[in-house]
Image 1 (cartoon, one colour):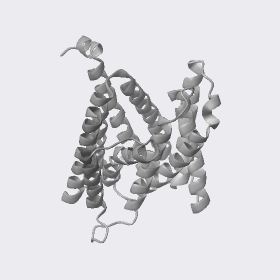
Image 2 (image 1 turned 180 degrees about the vertical axis):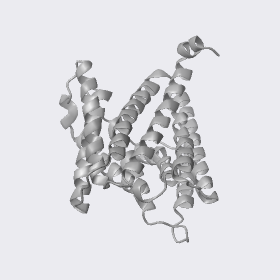
Image 3 (image 1 turned 60 degrees about the vertical axis):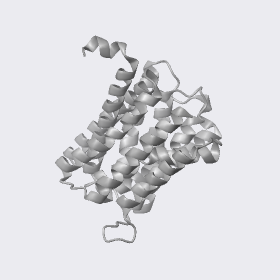
Length: 292
């Protein structure tokens, strides 16, 4: 297969964009976990959000778009903002306190939570097979968390709460006014990171002066994260969703690989099994939704 065939095939092109996006987000998480070894979560969120907001504001300016659209003050976006703030505060606390592998594995349950949200708020109909897949996905999450067992970490619950927040954000994005572009939504999303950081700092109250390594990691994470977000937008616009969306799950592969190489993480058998069940449940839910 040559380059021209990839360019001419929108599904293949979209799948590659999705893989690049997931690799970028995994690298971003790894770098930010490094930063949080020397910097409080709230401070990191403020700096990361400021950098990302500047990048997307420049992109909006170059495209001739207003940095904030008129629809930005809608009630739906306000609710989306609350979910995004909660998602990032809990997710990055989980990332700071637990392993990259386990946090990324729990994060893969986001589509399952989105499906339940669609049932509750958008009145979507779901058959028995998809309900079974959702329940199996939650079973996978329980295998990773192991409440009541020796391997249970209370901080792991932050990953679940973060996943719930991101699911709420995704549901809010679905109902976002069409007048708000992806770039403007990116600006707004990074603004929510700044607010999330302020919330977190109001609780911890500590600030540190970052060293050169932390600054370099933070700048690199901002650039890679912005690029990954752009790849994600391209992927979802390029090919069929049913073909492109399953490649979201390669993020878990990248995260576990980076966790192994950078942090010497060794996911145990239950974590690997739980992650596999979550991914399989998500893929099955997607396949059933396409047949509906």
